[in-house]
Image (cartoon, rainbow, N blue to C red):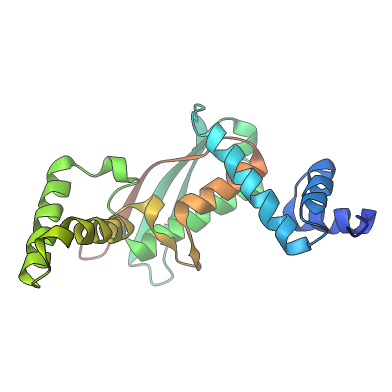
Length: 198
């Protein structure tokens, strides 16, 4: 196993923002491979984000985004646990990125849980009919509908949408990554998107 040097630990710390001991452990666990160590820390950070998800997020900020053509605007409430975190650059940058994304992607709901049952029922019915119309065998229709419903959620739910600047991440991953860095629960409270003529 290669020797884990102080320089390696420092580099990993600079690249991830993780603590020195966490960086050392990640490098030891991955045989000194820097990229694998970054993934190791990200997984660990995202796991800790999941633990924080139950905590109350009653502080936060309201941000606005107006597109350069001044035809689309967004108001977003992003919540966290403390006023201290609400004032950090990372939190404010996250809020701005999400508001800009909303202007571009036009989600209808924050999360899957927010989609009304009648909207879901109607969408499932339409997708079932479509699959049968396409001549798909009845025994695979449910699987097809399930796949199409996940695409539906990506279209209408903010947290499920691929981030406009990096479609390898969903908005919920962006939030989880910031939770891992800041150590507090972060939630989208609500948003409103305005567009001329809509």
